[in-house]
Length: 169
Image 1 (cartoon, rainbow, N blue to C red):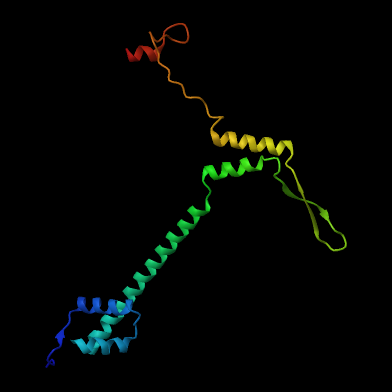
Image 2 (tube, rainbow, N blue to C red):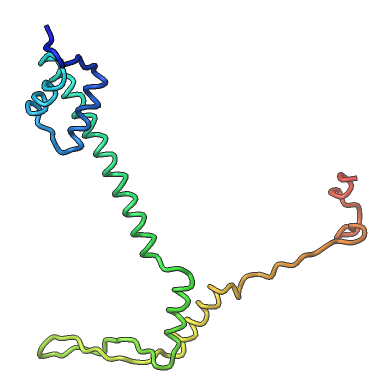
């Protein structure tokens, strides 16, 4: 016979209570049985069966949430890592400044085996390529779009009867 003050708990309620306890950081099987028994009446076998189901469902839910969060974090960092078109254009434009220098390997020291590097200005071909890239990004090479209207009658391109025009009539 149940003790006074304790009520019976359904499986759905038990699952909800267990999820609350899991989220608070408590997952000990027998410890949680003691906590649940202080509020509700229930059999030991029923509790352990429901606990096993609830813990596996909770762990799957946590794992899925963690995977989704990792994917969102990765997407965010990739979006941050990509430069905008304007940033790329500004970077290329800064390379065209007269004081811009690029590092170049000029040789190696035979005794120490160290690489010897030197700073140099861009050569004309490199500057031309940067200008070309900026023009591409700007759309300078894109074909012009023209609004054209055809007035008058359509005439065949070649003499004789045009089969396509005859079908339309």
